[in-house]
Length: 400
Image (cartoon, rainbow, N blue to C red; front, side, top):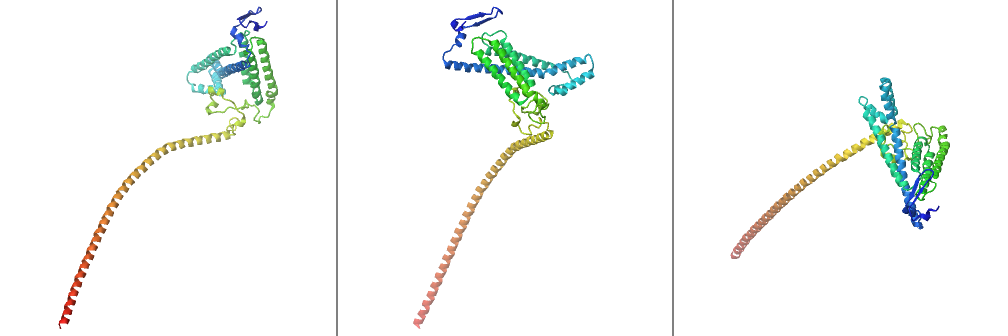
C-alpha cells in the first residue's frame, strides 16, 4: 500500500497480531513528500540538528547517571558495614570502614572527619544524590523521546535504543582503555546511531525495529573487534611503554588535574564536558604523578609553591609599591612646591639686592661725578690764581 495515495487525509493503521495502533496526520505525511531539493536539504540539516541534540542529552545524562552510581557504590558498602556493627563485631566493622577510607578516598575524607560523629547524614546525602540524578535521567529521556521520536514508532523502540546507549556507555567506561579503541569506537558507534536516527527522522515508517537491531549488533561487532585487536593484546604489552594501560594509567588519554585536591576528592561536574588529551599535550613534570615519578613531582610542587610565593610577594610589592610611589610623588610635589616658593623668594631677594646694588652704583657714580666736578672747580681756581700772579709779575716787569 502506498502512503502517498493517502497523503491528503489522516491515517491510522492497526496491527492485527499485537493490537498496536500507528497514526499519521496530513501535516506529517506532507512533510516527507517534498519535491524541492532545497527544502529537502534544509529538512536534512534540521534533522541532523535534532539528532545531535538528542544524542547529547542521552549520552551525557546516561554517563552522568552511571558515574554517579559507581561513585555512590561505596555508600552501599558503608550501609552494610554499619548494619554489620549491630550484629557481629565493632572491631571488624571498624576495619571495614578503614578499608573504605583507603580504597575510596573521596568518601573516606568525610568519613574520617565524621569519625566521632554521626554518619547517617553523609549516607543520606549520597542516596539523595543518586535519587536526584535518576530523576534528571528520566526527565532527559522524556525530552529525548520528544526530540527524536515525535511520531508513530514500534512499541519499545525508543526504550530499547536508550537502554542500548546506556549499556554502551557502561562498557566503554570499563573496557575501552587503549588509544586506538578510544579513537575508533566512539567514532563508528556514533556514525551508526546517526545513520539510524536520520533514517527514522526522514521516513514515514518502515523496518525501524529491524534496522535498530542491525545497528546495535554492528556496534557490538565493532566493540568485539576492538577488544580482540587492542584490549586483550595490551595485557602483554611492555608496562614501561606510555601507551600501555596499567594500574596507574587505566587509560592512555589524560585529563588535566586543575586542583591537587581532586586526587583524593571528586572533580567538579563541568569536567564531564572537558576533553581528554594524549601524552604529547603535557610536559614531563605535568605527567610526574601519572608516571609515579615522585622526585620530579616534589620538585614541581616546590617550584610551584615558590612561584606562588613570588607572585604573592610581587603583588604585595606592587600594592605597597604603588602606595609608596604615590607617597613619593606627593613628597616630590611638595618639595617642588617648596622649591618653587623658595625660588620665588630668592628671585625677589635677588631683585631687591640688584636694585640696592644699582642704587649704590648710582650713588657711587654720583659721588664720583661730584668729586670730579669738585676737582675741576679746584683746578680752575688754581689756574685763575696762577694767571693773576703771572699778570701781576708781568706788570711789575713792565713798570720797572
